[in-house]
Image (cartoon, rainbow, N blue to C red):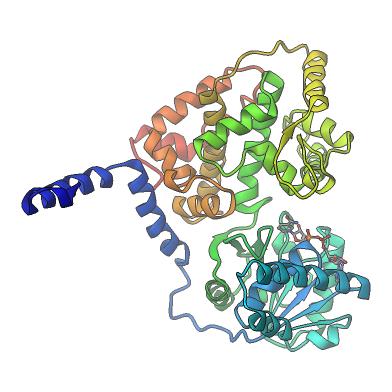
Length: 457
Ligand SMILES: NC(=O)c1ccc[n+]([C@@H]2O[C@H](COP(=O)([O-])OP(=O)(O)OC[C@H]3O[C@@H](n4cnc5c(N)ncnc54)[C@H](O)[C@@H]3O)[C@@H](O)[C@H]2O)c1
């Protein structure tokens, strides 16, 4: 258009259009993310001139889903990796998956054959700890059981050279306790990769009580080398991302009980901009993982309320995409989520046993309950110092959980929505007897900021 006008009019037209675009929430969100990404790499008490340890070689313990993906990140960056397992079969399986991944990239023209060979030449495997003792950084990705982690870290403490960084990829376990299995807790840190680890941008760097500053500085710079967005998290159950997603998942369950279908919830939040809704996400990640966590919760936090629907789904063996059925059905080799009548019946029957009459729920309510559940938990996380800044939480959600980029993350979204309005919505949700009123009590930080007319960011 500007080119069709006289020069000055064209310039004016461009300027006016630019100003209008600059004032949109989308523009604000993208600028926010630009700044947030840079901010996330800084740690207040770890100045940029903190000496770093040299990281020239990596060892990975466990060649499963995560171990393989984690290894690929370093191979891609030209850093040699040695994977350790307990059995040769497990090593062979892991190696085959890595090869298949690369080969599919070669087939799709995303990777040159010689680059593939070069990467594979940097990879070696072993069954013996003796072979990894000289690695500069070792990343453990074995089963999510404290007993197994203990065995591995006691062994690492015995064999690893002095100054090696000992990292755990645990998603839920206490990194301080893991550090306590060694006599060098200052060298222990959490490196929480997301699945698929060779694809997902997010890396939560979990700082233990005793993690040394130079270890933090080193792993933040390693993250950059392997092209991850690193966000520092303190130690708590689920760290930043998964602790919040648990609340979001709980709301998804309540929405089913009150009258929604999985596809209605997913569609509403996908229309808001999420890459996928909670039920498609559950199917992708494996519903059995959430089931295992809830079983632990029923014992440890018996007053926490959950919808039974996800447990009933797992009892039906519907673990998700890996078995071709979860909240939806999946056809071999395809990722399309096809609604399933058995699942709908299960939800309807469950409502009956609970004596609930289904009501029509608007997309607006679905989106607000899902997004504000993230926001309220995030406010607790911020207040407890688990996250250093609100914008770090936004980075976690944009790079790890498919939150729409153009909305800038949950915290910026809440800021733009108005924290006072967020609290009013929460108070409405708290009056719903089928929801969890205690959860919707606004976090003290949120209440304070709203009262002062301030924002998170
Ligand atoms: N799968 C995910 O989405 C995901 C995401 C983030 C973090 N994690 C965490 O990553 C870790 C691994 O998860 P995963 O999904 O890759 O599991 P997995 O079951 O696919 O792989 C675990 C591997 O560890 C090996 N192993 C078990 N004990 C061992 C030992 N003592 N020494 C050496 N190897 C041993 C097993 O043979 C297996 O190959 C867990 O702590 C998990 O919580 C998983």
